Amino acid sequence: MNTFTAVKEKPVYEHDCDECWYLGSYEKWQDGKTVLYDLYAHWDEGQKTVIARYGSDGPDYLSGLPFASHEEVLRVAVERAIQYGVIPETVGWPRSGHVLVL
Ligand SMILES: [Zn+2]
Image 1 (cartoon, helix red, strand yellow):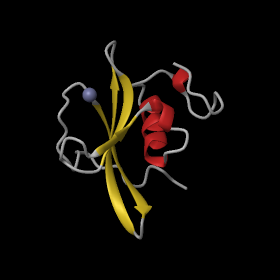
Image 2: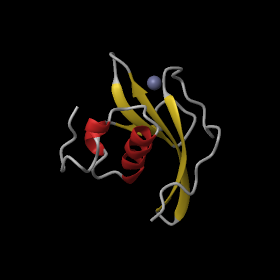
Image 3: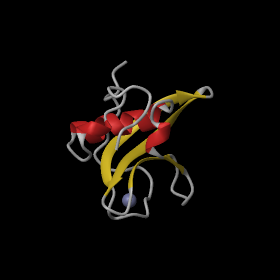
Image 4: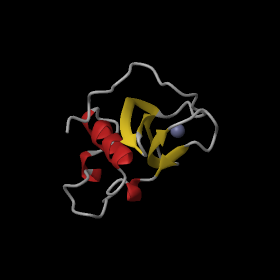
């Protein structure tokens, strides 16, 4: 499956962090409908994570590197973040197996 079919230039939803890198949006078919996610990586000394936002309300997001191995949208965020050079390749899912290496 091509995971880069739904990249949009601007986020669809509001996001409350200025430090995040926007990685494009991603459409996922779930529960009988298409859900659009805005993908982000937040990568600095304080926090290292990927985020998939599906609404403009504060809590409307998924996040967490440990979940990227089984959550499609977070996995796509990791892959894009590595491709764009936002996060180091050593994080690389799934090259390091089922465990993410920081
Ligand atoms: Zn952030």
